[in-house]
Every structure is written in C-alpha cells, then in structure tokens.
Amino acid sequence: MTRTPRDRLATFSVVAAVPVVIAAFALQAGSQDANRSLFIHANSLLQTLPMWIWAALSALGSSLGALALFAPTLRLRPRWSAAMLLGMPFSWLYSQGFKWALDVPRPPQVLDSTTFHFVGTLPPDPAFPSGHATTAFCLAAVIALLPSKSHRAILAPAAIALAVAVALARIALGVHWPLDVLAGAAGGWLCGVLGVTLSNHFRFWERKQGIRAMAAILGSLSLVLAFQDPGYAPARLFQWLLALWGITGAAMAWPASRVGHGA
Image (cartoon, rainbow, N blue to C red; front, side):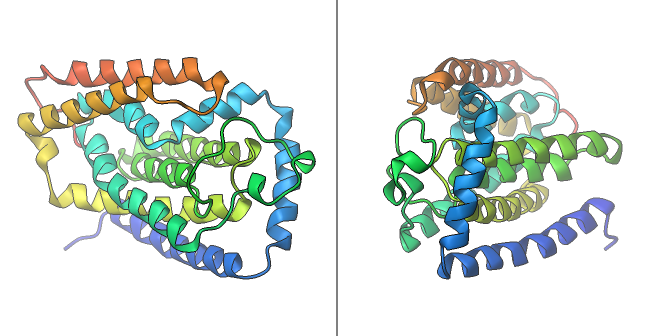
C-alpha cells in the first residue's frame, strides 16, 4: 500500500510525541522544584494579557467547547468532526485516567497564594495531565492532518498556535503546572492522530445518516455547553457564543442532501 504524505506526517508526529509523553511522566516522577519555579515565572509573565483572553481560550479547550467549535465543519468537511468525535474518548480516558491514578495537586493546593495569580474556581480533579491541553492538541492534530496539502500549510500552524495558547491559558489562570500542559499536549496529539486513523476505517461520515447522527450529537453537546459553568466569569459570554456557533453549525448540517469533501 502506497503511503501518502498525510500518512508520513502522522507517523512522524507520533514518533515525535511519544518521547515527549515519556519525558513528561519521567519528570513528573522526579523533583518538582523546577516545575514549580517555571510555573511561577510563566504565570507572572502571562499576566501581561487581559484575563478575559485567557478565560476565553480556556473555554475553547474544554471537551464541549472543542466539539462545538468543530460543528460547522459537518456540512462540507464531515470527516473533521468524525475524527474529533473518534479521538475525544481516548483524549478523555488519557487525561482523566492519569489524573486520578497519579493524583497530582494543582498549584493553589501547594503554593502560597501570594506567589502567583489564580483566577476562577479550582477544578475538582487532579492536575496531571491537563485535560484542556489534551483536548486542544487533539483538535490541532485533526486540523493539521486532514486538510489538503495546500490548505494544511495555513491551517496546521494556526491550529497548533491556538492549541499552544489554550495550554498557556491554563498556566495563566493558575490551575496547571508546565508539566501538566506538556503531557496533555503530547498525549492529546496522539489521540488526534488516532481519531484521524479511525476515521479512515470507520467511514460513517460519508453517509447522510452518519452526518445527521453527528449533527444530533454535536448540537446536543453544544446546548449542554450553554448551561455549563465555565468557572471564569469573563468566559461566560464567549461560552454562550461558542455554544450558539455549535448549535448553528449542527443545524446547518442536518438537512444536507449530499456529503461534503472528506478532507
């Protein structure tokens, strides 16, 4: 079987991401002095941007926020949404599984509150790895791998830059250590690659019924997003707009009589 440039790019990204995951877990098991020092410096530096920007970026990194963002792709690029939906369960299992297995405390549970900036409500789950970074890089992998070569040159850097911004937002808000977002980013990328691979084998996105099923799922999840507490007051309006974006995108795909391009 001939390997396409997309296949080679996916393989290369996996080879690059796996050592990062291993390194992040190895560093997490060691001394945390450097991790804490880097967090304090990064958290302080990131306060140069208004907090509402970080809060809005954080909303994009939630599972529901990322899926709502993808909903409008259903009409013309249904495979993008399919890959995201297939990769997200693995993303959730990766982040939540290791969070509760390792039970790493978040910065506000460890550091003196006068040494860093913390905004919003402290999430109830442990810190490592960052679920928002995992989700953001799962999304980035899908956008980086699925478009045509000509579009990939623009979309891939933009998606990766957005994912990096989401990861940094978690440090800016004071809820994650640098190692949390590093492990989340690398693991999320692997989950995104897995979603793209599975979408090549399970081609329900090529059928009208498959698109409608995805529209129902994404529309429902976007509606749930509208009522979810973002944990940050500045993000509430943005989250409502994101939910409306997802509901509208899902509704536009529902009456589609033909399947859009797969990539």
